[in-house]
Picture 1 (tube, rainbow, N blue to C red):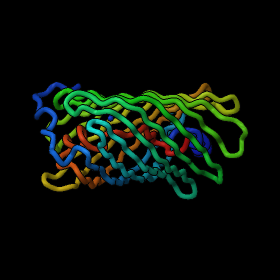
Picture 2: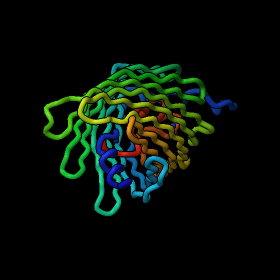
Picture 3: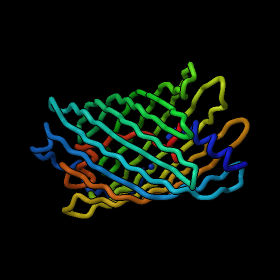
Picture 4: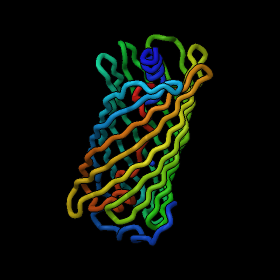
Length: 276
């Protein structure tokens, strides 16, 4: 019964300031960075443990990845494109999602960035597609070796052939702390809400921690992440714990700090279940 409730619920779920001595301010702006492009490709592997109304179920395999590229144009203006995908599976049960995002923003690497973004994605399970699009504002504040990142979004969700659209909105905040130029710790909080008349859409709370280490003078970064999601309706509650590790390969930026202030620094909310 728990497995059936979990699978059904995952079909309607959506798919990290610290006190320390600053390692440095924003990296000196390389001449080649302005009017240039940079980005990265990453992949991860891990597992998800669901807990339905207090009872733990079997863990599930989780894997996915993303690719991001950012280009600076007309001095401080930037455009960034993202591709991403996630999958959770356990035997015959699986949920997959893929999507894309676009960001347009103005950035001063010594102080802040502000702009807009939009996402479009599709999740599939048991022959049913869940299509969603969102858009909203985002900003980043650069405080020495700390980056503060905030987003808000609104959009629509459609399910299969149902002639109805459902409202979706979420807010998200991230703190990135650079212990060194190539060692970064992230903390993330997010909340997502859906409003529908036919289904008891859960409200989803997300909390995550992530560590990133880039090997000096190489494009390779390893990362580990723990994420907790709580999806709740008046009928049930599902808690999911996801632990994953991955590899990122970057181009156009020499350190994690440089990538954060000059490169593909924007991203979007991705929950433990890749389905809507």
